[in-house]
Length: 126
Image 1 (cartoon, rainbow, N blue to C red):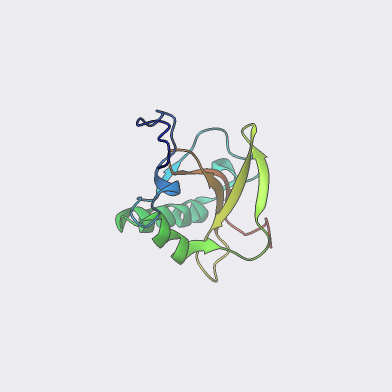
Image 2 (spheres, rainbow, N blue to C red; image 1 turned 90 degrees about the vertical axis):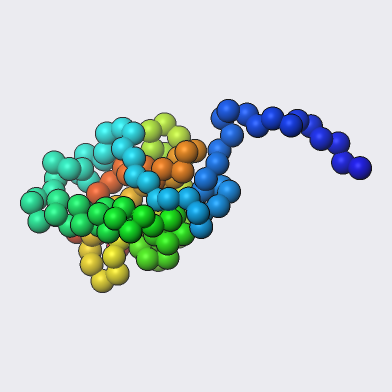
């Protein structure tokens, strides 16, 4: 019979994305300064409207992480690992097909997608 090491979970135990992407709601977060060339101040009025429409489409439909991945995850190219906010992160890119608008970020331990770049003209990772 296997030995049970503990019956309690640590308060720091990651949940959500690691457990069930089909049920976990997609949530956005900003946890630090955005990359200087890919931030809000670099967006014009039309690009801000595109960003708002993108977020609104996800949130108004109460999409799960899996649904957002299926609809918007860009998978062309290799998986990117990058140091962001002092830690190595797996970077994901979301955007609508056939449009240049992209957001780049990673999932934190609370299953929030942390945005660190807004790329309205798809200048990164073409």
